[in-house]
Image (cartoon, rainbow, N blue to C red; front, side, top):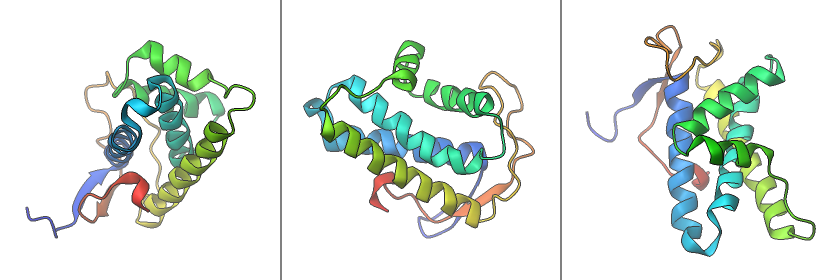
Length: 150
């Protein structure tokens, strides 16, 4: 398959793709200049923006469970727990502003996913499920781009 061919992915795969891309972008952009804990919080806020659109009609607990599962694919569970409960320190305006920006980017990309045909949202299943996502809608998308480039 050439780079100019659209790729069909399930909704879970597409979210995972964008999350992995965002993680690589954060690492490339901030590397050792920003502590890993702050990068995890940035990634969690990006994911929140991305999935809030998709899980809008679900209970908050279901959305949080989906976020835990997606993040758990990339970072250890103890870092996931810290990232999902972290609050910026008083006076850390850089982190506060950056969190708002990455969450807005995620939200924009979540809307783009829905606009491309993911109007039937299947609740995210556990990463331990053997046939997770088999009934999810396929999403046609262009070749890979950096998550924060849009």
